[in-house]
Image (spheres, rainbow, N blue to C red):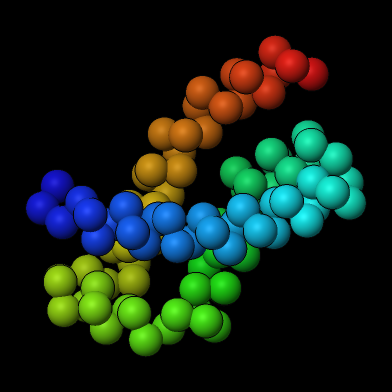
Amino acid sequence: MKYYRAILKYYYEINLFNLLFCLLSGYLFGVFWAILFFFTIGIVIGLIGFQIFKKQEYYMYYNLGFTRTDLLKKVLLLHGCLLIPFTGITVIFI
């Protein structure tokens, strides 16, 4: 991976909005729903939040050679790698 720091920065910023949404949903609906939202619709919420509040940063990623679809593919790949261990932990605790 050539620009892994840029991809990780984008991943962290997307998940910042995702985490805020999941903390709110966890408070309202419970821990199970918070974890479920984090791994399903939370990414969409994170993308919308990034689009609204940090849209100008897409120019930085574009200058590094990433398109929005490239970034989205890499974020989904990283998120999928996290999904496998956490779903096993969730099943154990439920």
